[in-house]
Image (cartoon, rainbow, N blue to C red):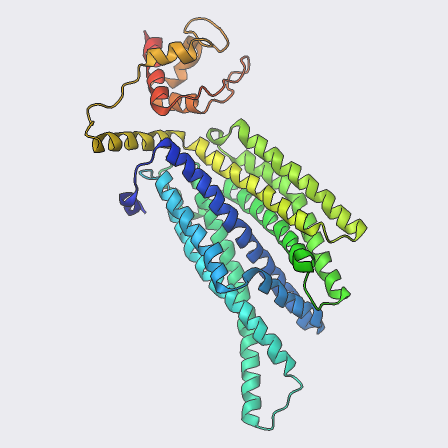
Length: 446
Protein backbone atom coordinates (compact mmCIF):
# COMPACT_ATOMS: atom_id res chain seq x y z
CA UNK A 1 0.00 0.00 0.00
CA UNK A 2 2.73 2.41 -1.03
CA UNK A 3 0.21 4.99 -2.27
CA UNK A 4 -0.60 5.81 1.37
CA UNK A 5 2.92 7.25 1.76
CA UNK A 6 1.73 10.23 -0.29
CA UNK A 7 -0.58 11.22 2.56
CA UNK A 8 2.03 10.84 5.32
CA UNK A 9 3.22 13.96 7.12
CA UNK A 10 6.81 13.74 8.49
CA UNK A 11 6.84 13.42 12.28
CA UNK A 12 9.29 14.58 14.92
CA UNK A 13 10.57 12.28 17.66
CA UNK A 14 8.00 13.64 20.10
CA UNK A 15 5.17 13.00 17.64
CA UNK A 16 6.42 9.47 16.94
CA UNK A 17 6.49 8.74 20.67
CA UNK A 18 2.94 10.07 20.96
CA UNK A 19 1.87 7.80 18.10
CA UNK A 20 3.15 4.79 20.06
CA UNK A 21 1.17 5.93 23.12
CA UNK A 22 -1.91 6.43 20.96
CA UNK A 23 -1.49 2.97 19.44
CA UNK A 24 -1.40 1.46 22.94
CA UNK A 25 -4.60 3.29 23.94
CA UNK A 26 -6.35 2.25 20.71
CA UNK A 27 -5.38 -1.38 21.26
CA UNK A 28 -6.57 -1.18 24.86
CA UNK A 29 -10.02 -0.50 23.39
CA UNK A 30 -9.91 -2.90 20.45
CA UNK A 31 -8.25 -6.01 21.92
CA UNK A 32 -10.51 -6.47 25.01
CA UNK A 33 -13.63 -5.92 22.87
CA UNK A 34 -12.60 -8.30 20.09
CA UNK A 35 -11.42 -10.83 22.71
CA UNK A 36 -14.78 -10.86 24.47
CA UNK A 37 -16.62 -10.97 21.11
CA UNK A 38 -14.58 -14.02 20.12
CA UNK A 39 -14.93 -15.83 23.45
CA UNK A 40 -18.64 -15.19 24.01
CA UNK A 41 -19.56 -16.13 20.42
CA UNK A 42 -17.62 -19.39 20.77
CA UNK A 43 -19.33 -20.19 24.08
CA UNK A 44 -22.73 -19.14 22.78
CA UNK A 45 -22.46 -21.54 19.83
CA UNK A 46 -21.37 -24.34 22.16
CA UNK A 47 -24.12 -23.85 24.74
CA UNK A 48 -26.76 -23.32 22.07
CA UNK A 49 -25.88 -26.66 20.49
CA UNK A 50 -25.76 -28.37 23.87
CA UNK A 51 -29.03 -26.75 24.93
CA UNK A 52 -30.83 -27.96 21.81
CA UNK A 53 -29.40 -31.46 22.21
CA UNK A 54 -30.45 -31.71 25.86
CA UNK A 55 -33.60 -29.55 25.50
CA UNK A 56 -32.22 -27.42 28.31
CA UNK A 57 -33.70 -23.91 28.40
CA UNK A 58 -31.07 -22.71 30.88
CA UNK A 59 -28.32 -23.41 28.37
CA UNK A 60 -30.28 -21.82 25.51
CA UNK A 61 -30.90 -18.62 27.46
CA UNK A 62 -27.27 -18.64 28.62
CA UNK A 63 -26.18 -18.82 24.97
CA UNK A 64 -28.41 -15.84 24.16
CA UNK A 65 -27.24 -13.81 27.17
CA UNK A 66 -23.59 -14.46 26.33
CA UNK A 67 -23.81 -13.08 22.81
CA UNK A 68 -26.06 -10.20 23.92
CA UNK A 69 -23.51 -9.27 26.60
CA UNK A 70 -20.69 -8.69 24.12
CA UNK A 71 -22.51 -7.30 21.09
CA UNK A 72 -24.84 -4.88 22.98
CA UNK A 73 -25.77 -3.01 19.76
CA UNK A 74 -24.33 -2.33 16.30
CA UNK A 75 -22.89 1.05 17.31
CA UNK A 76 -20.72 -0.60 19.95
CA UNK A 77 -19.31 -2.90 17.26
CA UNK A 78 -18.43 0.08 15.08
CA UNK A 79 -16.95 2.21 17.87
CA UNK A 80 -15.00 -0.51 19.69
CA UNK A 81 -14.23 -2.90 16.83
CA UNK A 82 -13.94 -1.09 13.52
CA UNK A 83 -12.85 2.47 14.33
CA UNK A 84 -9.88 1.47 16.58
CA UNK A 85 -8.45 -0.91 13.96
CA UNK A 86 -8.81 1.78 11.27
CA UNK A 87 -7.02 4.22 13.59
CA UNK A 88 -4.24 1.71 14.24
CA UNK A 89 -3.77 1.21 10.50
CA UNK A 90 -3.35 4.98 10.02
CA UNK A 91 -0.81 5.11 12.86
CA UNK A 92 1.25 2.31 11.29
CA UNK A 93 1.15 4.07 7.92
CA UNK A 94 2.85 7.00 9.66
CA UNK A 95 5.38 4.91 11.58
CA UNK A 96 6.36 2.67 8.67
CA UNK A 97 6.21 5.12 5.78
CA UNK A 98 8.82 4.67 3.03
CA UNK A 99 9.68 1.14 4.20
CA UNK A 100 9.12 -2.08 2.21
CA UNK A 101 7.23 -3.63 5.14
CA UNK A 102 3.85 -5.20 4.36
CA UNK A 103 2.58 -4.62 7.91
CA UNK A 104 -0.02 -2.05 6.82
CA UNK A 105 -1.30 -4.37 4.07
CA UNK A 106 -1.88 -7.12 6.63
CA UNK A 107 -3.65 -4.68 8.95
CA UNK A 108 -5.88 -3.57 6.08
CA UNK A 109 -6.84 -7.19 5.35
CA UNK A 110 -7.54 -7.66 9.08
CA UNK A 111 -9.68 -4.52 9.03
CA UNK A 112 -11.84 -5.85 6.18
CA UNK A 113 -12.14 -9.28 7.81
CA UNK A 114 -13.19 -7.75 11.15
CA UNK A 115 -16.02 -5.87 9.40
CA UNK A 116 -17.27 -9.08 7.73
CA UNK A 117 -16.89 -11.10 10.96
CA UNK A 118 -18.86 -8.56 13.01
CA UNK A 119 -21.65 -8.54 10.42
CA UNK A 120 -21.97 -12.33 10.74
CA UNK A 121 -21.74 -12.26 14.55
CA UNK A 122 -24.37 -9.54 14.89
CA UNK A 123 -26.58 -11.51 12.49
CA UNK A 124 -26.12 -14.53 14.77
CA UNK A 125 -26.98 -12.40 17.80
CA UNK A 126 -30.33 -11.26 16.36
CA UNK A 127 -31.20 -14.63 14.81
CA UNK A 128 -30.70 -16.48 18.08
CA UNK A 129 -33.21 -14.10 19.71
CA UNK A 130 -35.72 -14.88 16.97
CA UNK A 131 -34.96 -18.55 17.49
CA UNK A 132 -36.03 -18.40 21.11
CA UNK A 133 -39.20 -16.57 20.13
CA UNK A 134 -40.12 -19.28 17.63
CA UNK A 135 -39.29 -21.99 20.18
CA UNK A 136 -41.82 -20.42 22.54
CA UNK A 137 -44.45 -20.82 19.78
CA UNK A 138 -44.01 -24.60 19.57
CA UNK A 139 -47.25 -25.18 21.44
CA UNK A 140 -49.08 -22.45 19.55
CA UNK A 141 -51.30 -23.93 16.82
CA UNK A 142 -52.94 -21.21 14.71
CA UNK A 143 -56.18 -22.14 12.98
CA UNK A 144 -54.89 -20.75 9.70
CA UNK A 145 -52.62 -23.36 8.05
CA UNK A 146 -50.86 -20.71 5.96
CA UNK A 147 -49.78 -18.85 9.10
CA UNK A 148 -48.70 -22.13 10.68
CA UNK A 149 -46.58 -22.99 7.62
CA UNK A 150 -45.01 -19.51 7.61
CA UNK A 151 -44.10 -19.83 11.28
CA UNK A 152 -42.45 -23.21 10.64
CA UNK A 153 -40.55 -21.84 7.62
CA UNK A 154 -39.30 -18.79 9.53
CA UNK A 155 -38.37 -20.96 12.50
CA UNK A 156 -36.26 -23.32 10.37
CA UNK A 157 -34.70 -20.42 8.46
CA UNK A 158 -33.65 -18.60 11.63
CA UNK A 159 -32.16 -21.81 13.07
CA UNK A 160 -30.06 -22.35 9.94
CA UNK A 161 -29.09 -18.68 9.84
CA UNK A 162 -28.11 -18.53 13.51
CA UNK A 163 -25.85 -21.58 13.24
CA UNK A 164 -24.16 -20.66 9.95
CA UNK A 165 -23.75 -16.96 10.78
CA UNK A 166 -22.20 -17.76 14.16
CA UNK A 167 -19.67 -20.24 12.81
CA UNK A 168 -18.77 -18.05 9.83
CA UNK A 169 -18.32 -15.10 12.17
CA UNK A 170 -15.93 -16.98 14.49
CA UNK A 171 -13.89 -18.45 11.62
CA UNK A 172 -13.51 -15.11 9.83
CA UNK A 173 -12.66 -13.40 13.13
CA UNK A 174 -9.86 -15.92 13.71
CA UNK A 175 -8.38 -15.06 10.31
CA UNK A 176 -8.80 -11.34 11.04
CA UNK A 177 -6.85 -11.73 14.30
CA UNK A 178 -4.27 -13.87 12.49
CA UNK A 179 -3.64 -11.20 9.85
CA UNK A 180 -3.57 -8.48 12.52
CA UNK A 181 -0.87 -10.36 14.43
CA UNK A 182 1.00 -11.03 11.17
CA UNK A 183 1.03 -7.28 10.51
CA UNK A 184 2.16 -6.59 14.07
CA UNK A 185 5.02 -9.04 13.66
CA UNK A 186 6.09 -7.57 10.29
CA UNK A 187 6.25 -4.13 11.94
CA UNK A 188 9.20 -5.46 13.96
CA UNK A 189 11.11 -5.92 10.69
CA UNK A 190 10.57 -2.61 8.84
CA UNK A 191 13.46 -3.28 6.45
CA UNK A 192 12.05 -6.61 5.32
CA UNK A 193 11.47 -6.51 1.57
CA UNK A 194 8.09 -8.17 1.70
CA UNK A 195 9.26 -11.07 -0.46
CA UNK A 196 7.84 -13.61 1.98
CA UNK A 197 4.50 -15.06 0.90
CA UNK A 198 1.47 -14.91 3.13
CA UNK A 199 1.81 -18.54 4.30
CA UNK A 200 5.42 -18.01 5.37
CA UNK A 201 4.35 -15.03 7.46
CA UNK A 202 1.20 -16.46 9.04
CA UNK A 203 2.71 -19.87 9.75
CA UNK A 204 5.97 -18.55 11.18
CA UNK A 205 6.85 -19.40 14.79
CA UNK A 206 6.64 -15.70 15.71
CA UNK A 207 3.05 -15.27 14.52
CA UNK A 208 1.79 -18.65 15.77
CA UNK A 209 3.28 -17.82 19.18
CA UNK A 210 1.48 -14.47 19.18
CA UNK A 211 -1.75 -16.15 18.08
CA UNK A 212 -1.66 -18.65 20.97
CA UNK A 213 -0.83 -15.84 23.39
CA UNK A 214 -3.78 -13.83 22.09
CA UNK A 215 -6.26 -16.72 22.36
CA UNK A 216 -5.19 -17.57 25.91
CA UNK A 217 -5.61 -13.94 26.97
CA UNK A 218 -8.87 -13.58 25.01
CA UNK A 219 -10.47 -16.55 26.74
CA UNK A 220 -9.19 -15.50 30.18
CA UNK A 221 -10.72 -12.04 29.72
CA UNK A 222 -13.93 -13.64 28.44
CA UNK A 223 -14.14 -15.66 31.65
CA UNK A 224 -13.60 -12.50 33.70
CA UNK A 225 -16.21 -10.63 31.64
CA UNK A 226 -18.79 -13.40 32.24
CA UNK A 227 -18.26 -13.19 36.00
CA UNK A 228 -18.34 -9.40 35.90
CA UNK A 229 -21.56 -9.14 33.85
CA UNK A 230 -23.55 -12.03 35.30
CA UNK A 231 -22.60 -11.71 38.97
CA UNK A 232 -21.29 -8.19 39.65
CA UNK A 233 -22.45 -5.43 37.27
CA UNK A 234 -25.51 -3.71 38.77
CA UNK A 235 -25.90 -6.64 41.16
CA UNK A 236 -25.81 -9.23 38.39
CA UNK A 237 -28.48 -10.30 35.92
CA UNK A 238 -31.99 -9.91 37.31
CA UNK A 239 -34.67 -12.57 37.40
CA UNK A 240 -32.39 -15.59 37.19
CA UNK A 241 -32.39 -18.58 39.54
CA UNK A 242 -29.54 -20.10 41.52
CA UNK A 243 -28.94 -22.85 38.97
CA UNK A 244 -28.39 -20.23 36.25
CA UNK A 245 -26.02 -18.24 38.49
CA UNK A 246 -24.08 -21.40 39.29
CA UNK A 247 -23.75 -22.17 35.59
CA UNK A 248 -22.43 -18.65 34.83
CA UNK A 249 -20.01 -18.76 37.76
CA UNK A 250 -18.60 -22.19 36.89
CA UNK A 251 -18.06 -21.25 33.25
CA UNK A 252 -16.49 -17.89 34.16
CA UNK A 253 -14.17 -19.17 36.90
CA UNK A 254 -12.95 -22.24 35.00
CA UNK A 255 -12.38 -20.29 31.78
CA UNK A 256 -10.52 -17.47 33.51
CA UNK A 257 -8.37 -19.82 35.57
CA UNK A 258 -7.37 -22.39 32.96
CA UNK A 259 -6.56 -19.91 30.21
CA UNK A 260 -4.80 -17.52 32.59
CA UNK A 261 -2.58 -20.44 33.56
CA UNK A 262 -1.51 -20.75 29.91
CA UNK A 263 -0.57 -17.08 29.52
CA UNK A 264 2.92 -17.32 31.16
CA UNK A 265 3.84 -20.16 28.80
CA UNK A 266 2.80 -18.30 25.66
CA UNK A 267 4.23 -15.02 26.97
CA UNK A 268 7.61 -16.74 27.27
CA UNK A 269 7.42 -18.13 23.74
CA UNK A 270 6.33 -14.69 22.51
CA UNK A 271 9.41 -13.09 24.10
CA UNK A 272 11.67 -15.75 22.60
CA UNK A 273 10.23 -14.96 19.17
CA UNK A 274 11.10 -11.25 19.40
CA UNK A 275 14.13 -10.12 17.36
CA UNK A 276 17.14 -8.95 19.38
CA UNK A 277 16.66 -5.42 18.07
CA UNK A 278 13.27 -5.31 19.83
CA UNK A 279 14.47 -6.37 23.27
CA UNK A 280 15.27 -4.03 26.15
CA UNK A 281 15.09 -4.11 29.94
CA UNK A 282 11.64 -2.48 29.92
CA UNK A 283 10.26 -5.45 27.94
CA UNK A 284 11.16 -7.79 30.80
CA UNK A 285 9.90 -5.35 33.43
CA UNK A 286 6.46 -5.18 31.79
CA UNK A 287 6.49 -8.98 31.35
CA UNK A 288 7.08 -9.30 35.08
CA UNK A 289 4.13 -6.97 35.74
CA UNK A 290 1.91 -9.13 33.52
CA UNK A 291 2.83 -12.19 35.59
CA UNK A 292 2.46 -10.35 38.91
CA UNK A 293 -1.07 -9.18 38.10
CA UNK A 294 -1.99 -12.66 36.86
CA UNK A 295 -0.77 -14.13 40.17
CA UNK A 296 -3.18 -11.83 42.01
CA UNK A 297 -5.94 -12.96 39.64
CA UNK A 298 -5.21 -16.62 40.49
CA UNK A 299 -5.68 -15.86 44.17
CA UNK A 300 -8.97 -14.04 43.52
CA UNK A 301 -10.26 -16.97 41.46
CA UNK A 302 -9.28 -19.37 44.23
CA UNK A 303 -11.10 -17.19 46.78
CA UNK A 304 -14.21 -17.14 44.59
CA UNK A 305 -14.14 -20.94 44.41
CA UNK A 306 -13.63 -21.49 48.14
CA UNK A 307 -15.61 -18.63 49.68
CA UNK A 308 -18.45 -18.46 47.16
CA UNK A 309 -17.83 -14.71 46.89
CA UNK A 310 -18.90 -12.93 43.72
CA UNK A 311 -17.88 -9.42 44.80
CA UNK A 312 -14.34 -10.19 43.60
CA UNK A 313 -15.61 -10.36 40.01
CA UNK A 314 -15.20 -6.64 39.36
CA UNK A 315 -11.65 -6.57 40.74
CA UNK A 316 -10.73 -9.71 38.78
CA UNK A 317 -12.00 -8.33 35.47
CA UNK A 318 -10.21 -5.02 36.06
CA UNK A 319 -6.92 -6.78 36.85
CA UNK A 320 -7.17 -8.95 33.73
CA UNK A 321 -7.59 -5.79 31.63
CA UNK A 322 -4.58 -4.21 33.40
CA UNK A 323 -2.50 -7.32 32.72
CA UNK A 324 -3.54 -7.20 29.06
CA UNK A 325 -2.59 -3.50 29.02
CA UNK A 326 0.95 -4.35 30.14
CA UNK A 327 1.21 -6.93 27.34
CA UNK A 328 0.11 -4.29 24.81
CA UNK A 329 2.80 -1.94 26.14
CA UNK A 330 5.30 -4.74 25.48
CA UNK A 331 4.20 -4.80 21.84
CA UNK A 332 4.64 -1.06 21.39
CA UNK A 333 7.97 -0.89 23.24
CA UNK A 334 9.34 -3.78 21.17
CA UNK A 335 8.20 -2.07 17.97
CA UNK A 336 9.72 1.23 19.11
CA UNK A 337 13.03 -0.56 19.83
CA UNK A 338 13.03 -2.41 16.51
CA UNK A 339 12.31 0.70 14.44
CA UNK A 340 14.94 3.07 15.85
CA UNK A 341 16.59 3.57 12.47
CA UNK A 342 13.21 4.16 10.84
CA UNK A 343 12.48 6.73 13.55
CA UNK A 344 15.75 8.50 12.76
CA UNK A 345 14.82 8.68 9.09
CA UNK A 346 11.38 10.06 9.85
CA UNK A 347 12.85 12.65 12.20
CA UNK A 348 15.38 13.71 9.56
CA UNK A 349 12.57 14.23 7.05
CA UNK A 350 10.76 16.29 9.66
CA UNK A 351 13.83 18.46 10.28
CA UNK A 352 14.27 19.08 6.55
CA UNK A 353 10.59 19.90 6.07
CA UNK A 354 10.48 22.17 9.12
CA UNK A 355 13.63 24.01 8.01
CA UNK A 356 12.27 24.46 4.48
CA UNK A 357 8.99 25.88 5.82
CA UNK A 358 11.04 28.43 7.77
CA UNK A 359 13.15 29.21 4.72
CA UNK A 360 16.25 27.77 6.37
CA UNK A 361 16.98 24.86 4.03
CA UNK A 362 20.71 25.62 4.09
CA UNK A 363 20.76 26.45 7.78
CA UNK A 364 20.09 23.07 9.34
CA UNK A 365 21.88 22.79 12.69
CA UNK A 366 25.30 21.06 12.53
CA UNK A 367 26.21 18.85 15.46
CA UNK A 368 29.89 18.38 16.27
CA UNK A 369 30.47 14.68 16.93
CA UNK A 370 33.72 15.30 18.77
CA UNK A 371 31.97 17.64 21.22
CA UNK A 372 29.26 15.09 21.87
CA UNK A 373 31.87 12.38 22.45
CA UNK A 374 33.85 14.49 24.90
CA UNK A 375 30.81 15.59 26.90
CA UNK A 376 28.69 12.41 26.84
CA UNK A 377 30.89 9.41 26.01
CA UNK A 378 34.50 10.00 27.11
CA UNK A 379 33.73 9.35 30.79
CA UNK A 380 33.19 5.66 29.99
CA UNK A 381 34.92 5.10 26.64
CA UNK A 382 38.34 5.51 25.08
CA UNK A 383 39.75 4.35 21.77
CA UNK A 384 42.76 2.41 23.10
CA UNK A 385 42.09 1.59 26.76
CA UNK A 386 39.37 0.31 29.05
CA UNK A 387 37.63 2.84 31.30
CA UNK A 388 34.14 1.52 32.07
CA UNK A 389 33.24 0.23 28.65
CA UNK A 390 35.50 -1.64 26.22
CA UNK A 391 38.07 0.25 24.10
CA UNK A 392 36.62 1.30 20.74
CA UNK A 393 39.55 -0.32 18.92
CA UNK A 394 38.27 -3.72 20.10
CA UNK A 395 34.55 -3.39 19.32
CA UNK A 396 34.08 -1.01 16.38
CA UNK A 397 35.20 -3.42 13.71
CA UNK A 398 31.71 -4.91 13.39
CA UNK A 399 30.28 -1.45 12.65
CA UNK A 400 32.63 -0.58 9.80
CA UNK A 401 30.63 0.58 6.79
CA UNK A 402 27.40 0.55 8.81
CA UNK A 403 27.00 3.82 10.67
CA UNK A 404 23.25 3.35 11.02
CA UNK A 405 23.76 0.11 12.94
CA UNK A 406 25.99 1.93 15.43
CA UNK A 407 23.47 4.77 15.68
CA UNK A 408 20.76 2.21 16.46
CA UNK A 409 22.90 0.74 19.26
CA UNK A 410 23.65 4.18 20.74
CA UNK A 411 19.93 5.05 20.72
CA UNK A 412 18.95 1.69 22.23
CA UNK A 413 22.03 0.06 23.89
CA UNK A 414 22.03 -3.60 24.92
CA UNK A 415 24.49 -5.79 26.81
CA UNK A 416 26.79 -7.43 24.24
CA UNK A 417 30.23 -7.85 25.82
CA UNK A 418 29.97 -10.30 28.76
CA UNK A 419 33.02 -8.86 30.54
CA UNK A 420 31.61 -5.35 30.69
CA UNK A 421 28.53 -3.82 32.36
CA UNK A 422 25.55 -2.94 30.13
CA UNK A 423 25.77 0.50 28.57
CA UNK A 424 23.14 2.94 29.90
CA UNK A 425 21.11 4.90 27.39
CA UNK A 426 22.98 8.22 26.92
CA UNK A 427 19.75 10.00 25.98
CA UNK A 428 21.13 11.49 22.76
CA UNK A 429 18.94 12.99 20.09
CA UNK A 430 19.06 11.26 16.68
CA UNK A 431 21.26 13.91 15.07
CA UNK A 432 23.63 13.79 18.08
CA UNK A 433 23.82 9.98 17.94
CA UNK A 434 24.54 10.07 14.22
CA UNK A 435 27.22 12.74 14.64
CA UNK A 436 29.05 10.92 17.42
CA UNK A 437 28.80 7.57 15.58
CA UNK A 438 30.33 9.13 12.48
CA UNK A 439 33.07 10.77 14.56
CA UNK A 440 34.16 7.67 16.47
CA UNK A 441 34.14 5.50 13.32
CA UNK A 442 36.25 8.02 11.41
CA UNK A 443 38.65 8.47 14.36
CA UNK A 444 38.87 4.70 14.94
CA UNK A 445 39.95 4.12 11.32
CA UNK A 446 42.84 6.58 11.74
